Image (cartoon, rainbow, N blue to C red; front, side, top):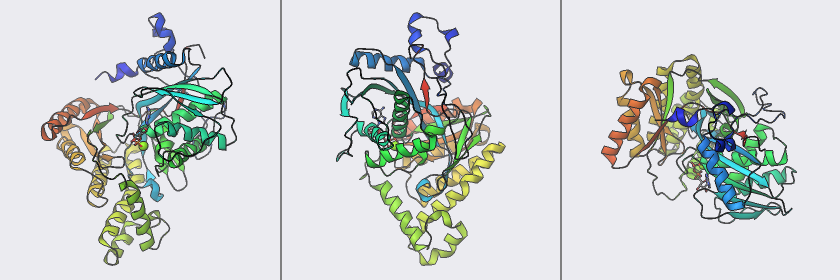
Length: 442
Ligand code: ADP
Ligand code: MG
């Protein structure tokens, strides 16, 4: 599949041609405070690897549009949630990991003193320009508002954001449930940290990015995506308590297991209000059960209350409360190498998302069923839909030596039964946001 090839660490020693000098790709960490507070040990922000082609593409895009070389670069990954779905906004636990797909931004401060941001993103027809001084939330958000929102967050935190130009290249699928939006916000925030020479506290950075999405993109997202894009660590998932915001890295260093992400490539054209509707239903369920949040009760209490609850309210509460209970158990199993146990909980999670929370689709169910057919000797431990639902991706935990055959199985049978070609890739847990060395020029 070439994943190792794409992702090999390119050091000064194995650069072969002169052009590769632009892709000098090694740690360029802040020497600042690193990660502090929230139960995460201090650790300088640094990077492990980035695909050379992606960096070259970003530099080329920047140079073509702005007529000079960029001065700094930053990358932030997308994410996949292993378990703990639709519970971040219910004060529950989530268990995401950063993926080996990322959004990369190369940038330079403007030389003319104008406080304007000029941004080009690969795939967009032309650069967009905006003031870095006057930032009000838009009526009709567009892609650039994710970045304007981040700039506004820095301004509100007292930073004087200079004018800059930036080019963006990403290999996180957009709108596929792997959080290209958080990758974009966090990459933008990391770029601004670099331009200002001032690293933010990582937890504050994640919250700033979430606010950008709420206020400027008008998406009422939870905190999971921005947290993992900031705090991801190679070889680890992240158990995040969304009530206390206490993060705990969960070792997943065993290279004998791999995560397969399968995109249904099928987004259902709904009204778009389903996410907000589920949030409102969860709040209504908490009220009906007499608690501030669904985090505050256990499954037995929900079951005991069933006779006096509306059936829909019961179903929503049942998924959320059982999922909140499952997630820390799943994290302990993962850490202990009990992949069979973990896989069973993934299937339980999928079942309540499908039947009680009603956010799955036939295509997601099919990919999970196909994965289940490869359990045991086939190498699959478990699978579930991941992300908000109504399309998007499934996540499958699989033995590494069987990953390729499972990928082929899912691909062939999904295509045969739906006529839609899925996109499937394997990933190990990756690092969170980091600076990227442009190759001695920055
Ligand atoms: P997801 O986060 O699951 O990928 P969202 O709908 O939350 O899906 O976010 C996708 C939106 O984020 C896009 O429609 C676009 O506005 C913005 N976006 C994400 N990545 C990029 C990018 N590389 N360039 C421009 N816009 C992007
Ligand atoms: Mg998103």
